[in-house]
Length: 254
Image 1 (cartoon, helix red, strand yellow):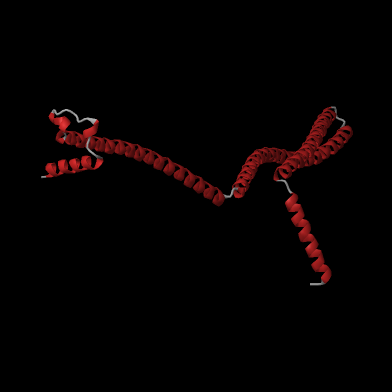
Image 2 (image 1 turned 180 degrees about the horizontal axis):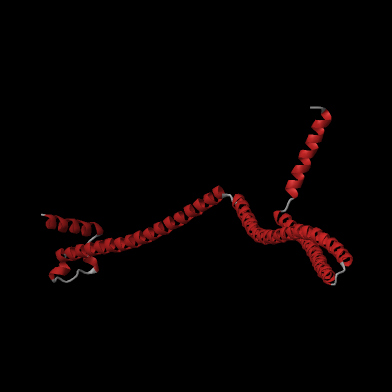
């Protein structure tokens, strides 16, 4: 293959690709229907002309056949009158009109067949146009559905599902963390309350124990036995008070 042939093939292939890419199925179908309708108009005109010609041939045939019959009657009349020469002339006229009628009859039959064929073609192309219109609407609907599906696929293709899933997981983790903090805060609040009550309870025990201890100490003192309290001159010293308390504890323990 020569260089020019290869260049020509490349150019043709590129042109075909451009034409194919530029084709709009809906517009192509619409133009096809318009072309078929134009052909239908021309076919109707041809059928009308053929039918007019057929009608004219029928009239000519009927006229020639009528003239042939008329001259036959005249030939018979001439024979009845004894004028054989006139009868012969009438028969010649009859033959002329008869031959013309036979020729017109052959053309009439042929023209009639053509008209019938044109009528069938007319009906066929009308049916094809109707079918093409229906098919065009179906293909149009399918094309619209295909475009809608393509747009949907493009939209879905633009959605980053991995990123969205990661975002949802991250948000879910934050929600779980918030719930855990709330639960821990609630538990800490309960523990604090319990610890406060434990302190109070512990404090009450110490106070009770301290009161009991004071009561025991008062039992061993002179005041607890009904003696008069000593005057300021005879008050025990601090050391004596401690010794007395220790002695009371020894007695309690003994």
